[in-house]
Amino acid sequence: MEKVIISAAITGGMTVPGQSPAIPITPEEIIDSAVGAHEAGAAIVHIHVREPETGKPSSSLERFREVVAGIKERCEVIVQPTTGGGKGMTLEERAAVLPELRPEMATFNTGSFNFGLFPIAERGGDYEEWEVDYLEGTRDYVFRNTFADMERICEMVRESETKPELEAYDVGHLYNIKYLLGKGLLDAPVHIQFVLGVMGANAAPIEQFMHMRRTALDLFGDDFTFSAAGVGYPAEYHLAAMCLMLGGHVRVGLEDNLRVRRDKRAESNAELVEKAVALADLFDREPATPDEAREKFGLKGRAAVAF
Ligand code: KMH
Ligand code: ZN
Image (cartoon, rainbow, N blue to C red; front, side):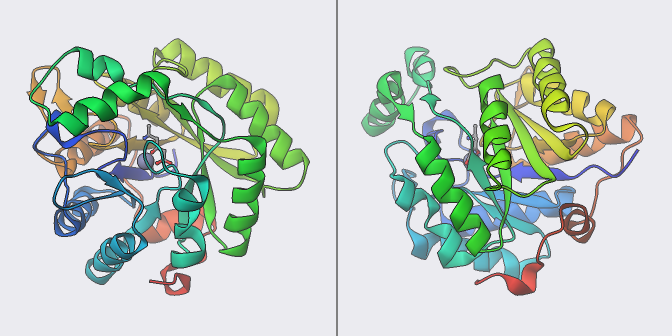
């Protein structure tokens, strides 16, 4: 089977630092963690940024530039900034990375839903007050991606020559992608990431993964590539295994999951990537290099970015 493209989601914008001391916070920590994840086998690093003092999710372009330029300086990995951002960010705030950084790839969220993380606060833990408010606030938080928003992002990724990674959290999102393709607003083949396990959208049992993949095959034939991001443990590795068996690609990282084993919390993103590489080897899948991933996805190349 073809090589597997491994993505590492380094820090995230919905998790809070109190959930794990391993979550990188400062620009230096995020850069170091991304380089470590690449050295462990990741071809893509998915990037959010945070306020260095508090760890609060941030949309600061200055901080994004510091992080993505710092990573580019140190390695060849594909740098994939988020356009999902964090709770309460406007679409303009979230998508500003596109015209500003003109990245090779970026995420593109394909539907709206109540992004529920409040059960984490309910479980209790050693959290700052703002962290409890942030998590608890998701009880009433709609992660907004309306058709008007998505049509706007379609324009912006075209203008910045950025390959969108289409984040589909539920089956209906696949039909949204079909609509945007039908309108000529997206270019085929599309790359779809099944993001499963976020409360408020689809859960991560493998049956749901198979249903999402089956629906995508019905809608797009084989004119798409796919990967999965299982949120939480063991979802992250169960869905990774499914993708490895079915010719898909894999996302791991502290943004989505804090454990490397049921009884062991991850100490780094590299550790999570190492497990994905070991799993891939069990399925005779070799990790793709960044340039092989660029080839596969038809990316414009790191020389064409604006950082
Ligand atoms: N946080 C993940 C569940 C994005 O950044 O645009 C999905 C994600 C989306 O990574
Ligand atoms: Zn993200």
